[in-house]
Image (cartoon, rainbow, N blue to C red; front, top):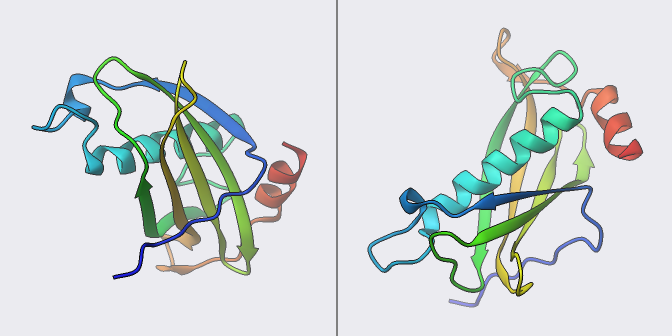
Length: 142
């Protein structure tokens, strides 16, 4: 199987730091693959919060993650600090993609990179909703 490639944007709009906790480490003693998804979820929630949104209220509609691609680059261990860079891109009628880059604080070594599909969703109507203009505006001003 050919290796999946994921080209990252040159600029990230948001960055947050997290420590790798004991629960983030697997039996091999390093960052567990499933925990990377949890870390990028937390980073996306923090990004939305600094824009004044939550995942259930982005300009009056909710959001839903539709897909995830994660590429693992190097190990991280309990106690390591990780800088997670986040940016939305590739906007379309109903959503966008979020890109992430996880970097070891101190060494600058890349730990992982990821992309998640993000749709806007009206949970009351149980259907997709157009991208809220206020979300695009705040992302553009950020």
